Image (cartoon, rainbow, N blue to C red):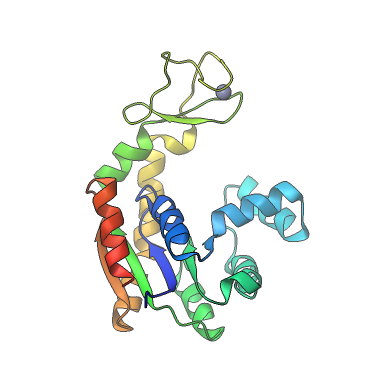
Length: 213
Ligand SMILES: [Zn+2]
């Protein structure tokens, strides 16, 4: 019987979202991405979405109590009762403790390891279309015609501030200070599984599938 109460841990750019989606389909359990939920709530203009938007627009992290509130509601839904894959939560020790306080016991925490230099290489090559928002990568998924959006034809792809190497290094500092301590937290609970995130995608997927058996 596969483990079904799961969490993806790892730095930005590790491929957590991709792996979580694959596992979600394979195990028929929901992919609970706090980033997706916040963006969705914001798009719909719910009270929680409006509150989150205030922080996001100010370039701040959404506070723990807001994030914890949306995760609690999401995990109470019918489709999450048989299992789920958390992606982007918990991100801090207080968030991890709040999950414990909800009585939710994770069965496996998949720690996708990728070096800082590799994260910078992956995220630093991103290009965005300012007209439609589509994201490309200089090396891995360039547009068909140089500097031109495949989707909308806009000429002139841009590198967002967030995707500049200095900005990525800054985000990584936050990851190492706030989120990486969760490795030890879940190791002590005996549920941590390391995944080498720098291998070929199909090999990363195999490690992830093995980890939940
Ligand atoms: Zn476009």
